[in-house]
Amino acid sequence: MASTLALINSILTNEKYKPILALIKGFRNGVVYGCKVRFPHSLVMTFLFKSGTLAEKFQGILEATYIHSKNLAFFTIIYKVVTGALQWLQSEKNVGSIFLAASIAGYTIFGNYNKVNEQVNLYLLSRIVYGLAQLSVKKGYVPKPKTAPFPMFAAFVWGVALLLFEYEREILQTSMKSSMTYLYDDSNNWNSFRDFLIYNK
Image (cartoon, rainbow, N blue to C red; front, side, top):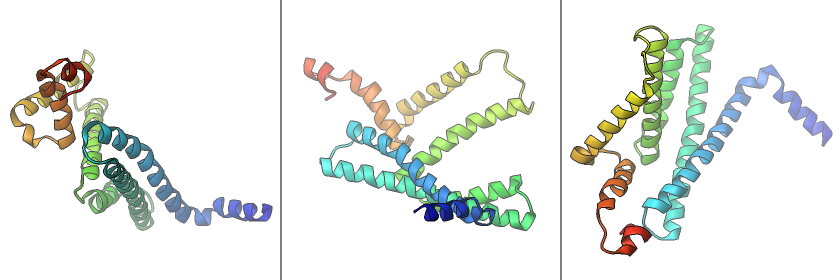
């Protein structure tokens, strides 16, 4: 047993095997992270907003978790393989190789339309828009605001969101539309104390 552990540790610490081991660990981390993020999210959203039998609900939760985990794992593999190949050709990572590798992996894995990929892509979009705004100030392309920008950011985001909901709701993502309907439309309707406070309708 000790000799087996010693052999495993010698392989894990050998630089020669590091690129292959990094792929294995990247795949593993994609699976674990996908499960940690998607399972609780799907569990909550399914039981709050979806109808169907208990078996159908759990099947949907497991399918969404599988898709999210698999996609993160394979994205990581493709990204690492392409960046490794480009680095071998160019001797070092650069902006172009990173963008190209991520674009290839994104197109291959997250370019297939399904609800999970839609949510992941929209999550990333919101984060990069926010990050690019901060970067533009950091680089001096935009003057640093004299007051905290976050309240204005919140005002703009919520203002546009509710305008779209009130006038063009069919273009909104399904889960966002469901959430807003629950908050803003369903709260206008009730027939008795029971559907006023106990349950929605």
